[in-house]
Image (cartoon, rainbow, N blue to C red; front, side, top):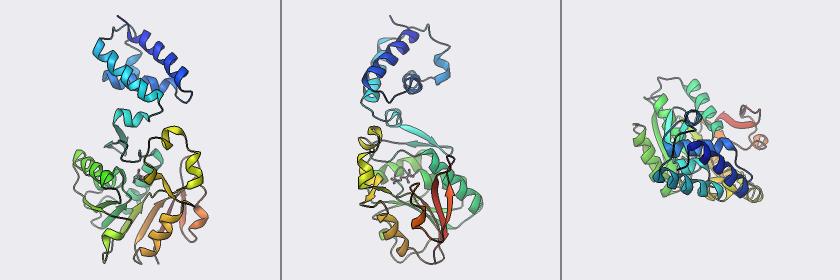
Amino acid sequence: MKTLGQILKLSYEYISKKSSSHSRHEVDELIAHCLGKKRLDLYLNFDKPLNEVELDLIRKNLTRLAANEPLQYIEGTVQFYGCTIKVDKRVLIPRPETELLVDHIVKTIGPDSDKTLWDICTGSGCIGIALKKAIPGLKVTLSDISKDALDLARENAALNGVEVTLVQGDLLEPFKGQKSDYIVCNPPYISEAEYSSLEPHVRDYEPKLALVGGKTGLECYDRLIPAISPGTSVWLEIGALQGAHFPGAKIIQDLSHQDRFVEFIKR
Ligand code: GLN
């Protein structure tokens, strides 16, 4: 019978042979997940013998990791601004930068708002659900063009115990004749050309619909912004080189000092 210490060593060897892009950290994280432990607990249990069930699960999941499947899809959830968000190949994996956007919006709106907010291109629902949890009085609607994504967003809303409205359709199409106080959107903003040079774990697993905006990457913004009612406060996530496309908007940077969000009131 092999011990955890031996399995960790074999796993590092296997992963480094199969794929250069994975760190020991990810292997540790995956094995901890398979064993229902925290990563740091692994190091206190090197001598623990592993049973066949545990070994099977580790083998199965390591094969997925070796094929470049994102760790988040294998584990099935991510932590996002205090919410547990289920993820699978139907939706983009929520990024840590996007938590900054949520935090900025919470600080801007304040905890007691009872206004309306639409989270357009909601995907997993992470932004709208986290905002609803932080600002319980806010009336939140999640929308996405993908029915599959919306199904998962609905599960995530239930998982986090928040009540939100969900509507399906392209950008503002499901909201004809309506107006919201706030709109937040992290649309697909990668160009066709950039898509082919994305890392395999992104390109081969995350939905292309959630990543690629079109030929220039700016297409969603150009269709969305003109359709927004005057007076609406808007926050958009953008690509690091796209800031110049939003004259007059306040540009907010992420922690690596890249332009990442724009904030403006629609005129
Ligand atoms: N709103 C989701 C997120 O921020 C999905 C975004 C998308 O699919 N483009 O993660």
